[in-house]
Image (cartoon, rainbow, N blue to C red; front, side, top):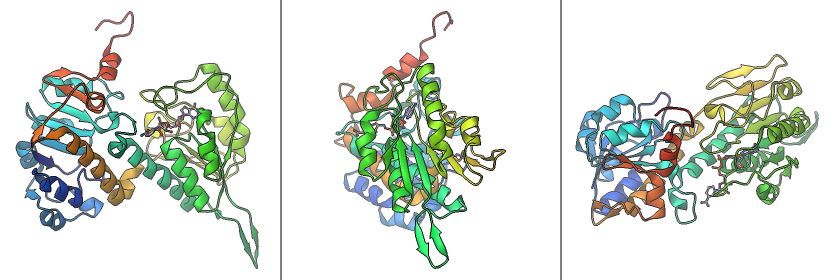
Length: 383
Ligand code: NAD
């Protein structure tokens, strides 16, 4: 197959879909890889490294899109990029179908075969393709570093000749992939960490990282399918918010990562809870892009609350760790490509769980069940 890697064009996106090492693996397996000149530069992968790995370098994006049978990207294509794609081409990227199900219609209409890296089933078999996990891990790590670098306090406890410093108190809300990495990173920096998740199944994982688990009885189970949380009722969320005010008020740093797939992020840190925090405290809201876990969050802004708390709504933290984020994403993409390319041809077995879960559109049709369900008009609404 001819696999093409264009430069990312989304504002602030520094990652690249394939790094030289994985390009070499794809070429060894009999594929051809064409990389746009400069595609890896922002992630510190140079053109000569791609050339040494055997890639062809293309002068511009137009050449990559014209030549490639499979276009691999990080972010979903812009309308200009989509306009460059032609019928029969395959597209692999973070297409986020559930955030915008209508976007999938464009792939079907243009007869593009679209596979979404964020739709890969979270199963053991698909673990090394799991780009949501590889990138969420980085986001959790970087969220703690942002907080540590901005807090006017030490994280660790220190006993010095000039006095004893108490360790910082960190509360991590949402203990999925990003949250567990945030807990581990804050612990490594010496903070006293408390973790919380609506899914009590993660209690042991939180404790095994050396953190306390905040117990809140919300009156219903938050366990959804596939290890995810389900959306809680308004009453349960209200109970959660009320029960968390004290823990939030005692924290120097609150990292929020709570999410429910395909839904707005649950609102957990209220204006009142922020008002209970001490001046100089920091909230890093990793759910900013899907509405935010904190009432004061603004997307891609740092907000100062009236009582001197900073609320960080920066999105796309994996892009700020572009070298390793690209390396891990590239491995995820490579594993998927190795899974779907058979004897040099794309072979999408729709009976296969991973392929069925990941393919959004093919042969001019939307084939992804969750997207089709999201496109169903609500009762009373006309199509
Ligand atoms: P996510 O990003 O969808 O959600 C982050 C966390 O927010 C989850 O732990 C969720 O329980 C929590 N949350 C949702 N609503 C909440 C609320 N109201 N209050 C507090 N917390 C709330 O999830 P994720 O990090 O992508 O993954 C979640 C889980 O999926 C993992 O912990 C794991 O069990 C499973 N998983 C399995 C695999 C695998 O088997 N290969 C891979 C990745 C993840």
